[in-house]
Image 1 (cartoon, rainbow, N blue to C red):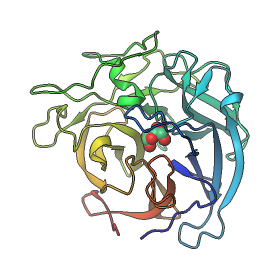
Image 2 (image 1 turned 120 degrees about the vertical axis):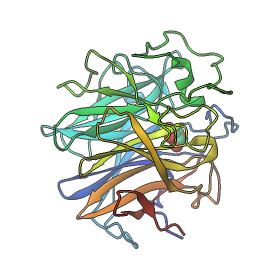
Image 3 (image 1 turned 135 degrees about the horizontal axis):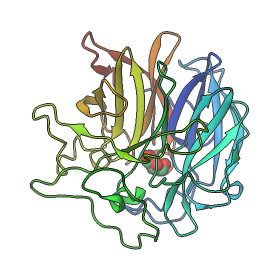
Image 4 (image 1 turned 45 degrees about the horizontal axis):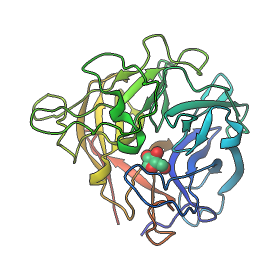
Amino acid sequence: MTPPLITTIYTADPSAHVFNDRVYIYPSHDRETDIAFNDNGDQYDMADYHVFSTSSLEPPYTDLVDHGVVLRTDDVPWASKQLWAPDAACKDGKYYLYFPARDQQGIFRIGVAVGDAPEGPFKADPEPIPGSFSIDPASFVDPDTGDAYLYFGGLWGGQLQCYQSPAGPTTPKTTAPTSTPPEPAGAGAKALFPKYAQLDASMRKFTPEGAQDLIILAPETGEPLAADDHDRRFFEAAWMHKRGDTYYFSYSTGDTHYLVYATSKSPRGPFTYGGRILEPVLGWTTHHSIVEFRGRWWLFHHDCELSKGVNHLRCVKVRELFYDDEGRIFTKQD
Ligand code: FUB
């Protein structure tokens, strides 16, 4: 079995990027809690972020560096709790850490913190990104156009089901979802889409068009995935990467525990479902990132091996990822 990459603290949701020919990893920092496990994810009660870096992605990971705490809940004026899956981006020499947290009303928003180096420290903006909502921001700076985007959203505890709209931009709710609506279900119902928004030149705001649906189609019908298609519908853990002229949007299917992907020739979609990247791992959640480093592609993900199966005490792992001649992703799973 692939050994954990990070063993000194519990980590999850690894977002990996190559900056200055070194891999930087931006994970969640899991911690012990006596909060009871529930479908809302209250037991994922994280309060800070560490940044890690390495130049070696194969065991025994002797070059791994823990750069320490780079941001705490207390450093974020608008946040109340639950620093969930973060990501980072670099533009024009500045580094941007994007992160979700619950605001003072209990609504998940997405914040940004800015630094001068990939390992931080990062200073949080005083307010969340206007028009942001839900969880799991994944940043993507198109290597060919320089356009920057955030992809985000998560069902159930991630509150994405509070933002259902038939079409077009969504409007964040202004009141706390005390009892959230269920995700769509039943014959004829379409799955909820993940969201994306282009970032403006400041990298701290959405462009005026705001959050849009990222449509994922079933290859056999050309129609949006059905709500009941839990083996393929988006749940959380958005990630975007580009290989050649193909955009790969990957995500977790949540309650069916797969990491899967869809492809498009545009970062705005529509995307067509492509297949599975990773089968279920030990633990309820699965979350990942994909990055090219020195000519090879790598899948960062997590499981619960280090805690022997405690769902909210996870550990980051990395394994090589491959493409066949048609651009289909595969991994060599244990
Ligand atoms: O780490 C908290 C949440 O668990 C993340 O936001 C989800 O993607 C899941 O991994």
